[in-house]
Image (cartoon, rainbow, N blue to C red; front, side):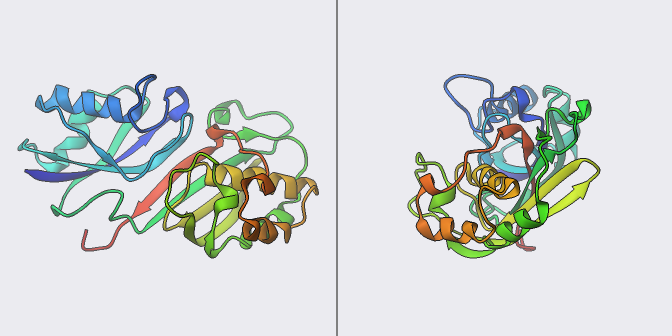
Length: 248
């Protein structure tokens, strides 16, 4: 058996998330079907993490074990011809047996995009949350900086979270302007269910002046979901990159 790791990008608009579900179309199911068409194998892929319905990815990673002799460098071309157009394999490589796309991951980077234009950019409508009301981006950056470091992020995760604990480390978090687009980047050792979307929803309150930047630290320390703002729309969120140790 060989262990193959794959990087995949997808437009999450028409999917019910990455992970297989009893109902609705998912990225995992489409990829597993593509592999079956290619090799005849019924197998289950292991994703580096789950993305919710409507969330996109440019650098999602998954791995699977196969008996196929297809060279690693041929997997991307071979699979792409058997996948729908909203899923594209960008790389594939053979990895050690112990590689696990989720457990072996060291860092993940997400981006949330807000379209700040008076009118929405029609070409970004699937990938950015249109928000024409003026925002105090400097205050939002100050508030975002409060989240860098190791913290308990209970206030910034769904009440439906099933994780045993909510302690995560954020290595960097910042805003970047690109024309009328405002991107928020967050890199951490892991993220909780709806965490980035709740962070963004709360930061929008900061941008409107409903909260002060220092309130982000107060909300964090409070460890109650009710203290934070609303959950931002899913279509503005993208998984950009997953990092692994060099030996992997």
